[in-house]
Length: 321
Ligand SMILES: NC(=O)C1=CN([C@@H]2O[C@H](COP(=O)(O)OP(=O)(O)OC[C@H]3O[C@@H](n4cnc5c(N)ncnc54)[C@H](OP(=O)(O)O)[C@@H]3O)[C@@H](O)[C@H]2O)C=CC1
Ligand SMILES: O=C(CO)COP(=O)(O)O
Image 1 (cartoon, helix red, strand yellow):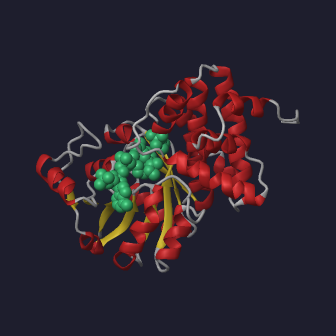
Image 2 (image 1 turned 30 degrees about the horizontal axis):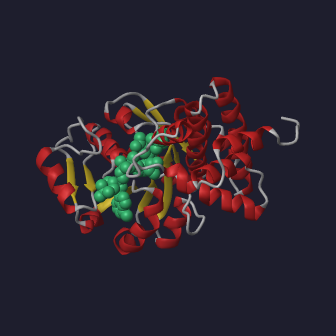
């Protein structure tokens, strides 16, 4: 059986490598940065996931060619880097099962990860691994459940078995578009929830925001051809709950900093910011009502203050739920 590869040695890719390796499956973990890879080989630790020793059967490399013998390949680079990464890596990775582990919508093309994979690697099997899970929780072996989505049921079942571990339980779905949109859209709502809490608007307002945000997620996903039930699963509702209620979430913390008018380190990966812009543009072009997303995009771009966004949301015409 071929090795599992993980392309992208951030916190999430590293956590997946650790849990798979601990379950007895050798992993090749690819980092773009040679120095970072060399440090990981030497210290057996990744600074992006501190305090977690890399098991012996994780091989760290910065050589993309090392991935030629691997199948499946998990893609855990950030969403806005995926298209560029695959442009460079397509010749090496095509023909394999390519499992998107990133959450978002590409700003330049408006595409999700599976469409980007299919465009770059026409003979690959695109799949999505997504759902409520913090890298640190997976790496510590805490119980987590995710969605593995793939159009082809046989490939989906094989990936589900290959990537489940005693503590990481995968549920199968045949709706990758719905699964990836759940993970992308919940990050926008997490920024909004962070703003609500950071600005001191209260837990009741956050509950209202999450509920109306969820309605918005379903509306958008349906318009993009997804099944509404997928959004009610781990990849949508499950991840919405986790990310809107935990200060472990970077999207939530970014929103909270905006709400407080506090500094937030721009080096930290916040997938919901670019995705809010991408989704707001698609929604506007297609006439999809997305008031929370539009507000988040306007606030992060400085086009509207938080107070103005709240007033606009509260003064929309009264309607049926
Ligand atoms: N962290 C988490 O808890 C979870 C994250 N995810 C998703 O996983 C994805 C990755 O996030 P995460 O691991 O947390 O991010 P991190 O910020 O921890 O790390 C990002 C990684 O991507 C690498 N990278 C950045 N740009 C490129 C590029 N152009 N080509 C190749 N590699 C690149 C970085 O390399 P370098 O160090 O050289 O900059 C770094 O190793 C995101 O979409 C996120 O939503 C999903 C579930 C949980
Ligand atoms: O996607 C995640 C949890 O499921 C991680 O959330 P953040 O990217 O907001 O930290």
